[in-house]
Length: 273
Image 1 (cartoon, rainbow, N blue to C red):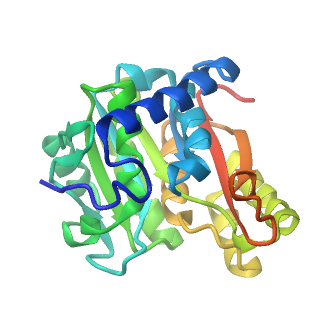
Image 2: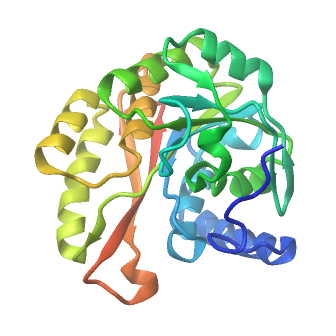
């Protein structure tokens, strides 16, 4: 079992406080956004006080999430531990209880990839996947999870992950979440300009263009690999467009607009925008 590593820092460690916080975020999101037919979405992974409201928008906007059998969560590797692309077979504990791993599905995904390994080291202290799980538990307590941690985020790795998911998953049963923040520690206006450009590539599902622009302009999108993998998965399922539902930054919570982190809610819809 993988025990919670960032409860008490990124989100409340007390079940009651966490449940109340999630209830508030999801209730607010539901007043502004309606569920859509979508195969997955992008969520931020900062502390909930900074990005929880933005994450909630993605979760309430994916209609199939409420009944999904399994949610696949792809996060970037911030720790440098583990394999190039690491799949977890553990159940994950949060203050809301135990999220069960869909072991059979994880093994099928791994069979369809040439790059994924079963490796718990990458997940042991990584927050990018963990912070998504309480939202899933709150919305669909019965859902199982498959957790993927990407140290390799280059185009080849992302395409490998995306194609493996497209070959394995059924959008009627499965939802894919890519965990990523956007610009890091830039003035608010600079971050927004860079991130809006990055989001244009994401909305068009232009994975090669997105990756080339990241390298050319030095955009600090920490989960560009998971986003790219989701883009590839969505295209493999016939999706033509993604929609940005909300873009914001940490300055809205901290009051510091000189060095912000950008956050976006994006859904990969089944119809053109």
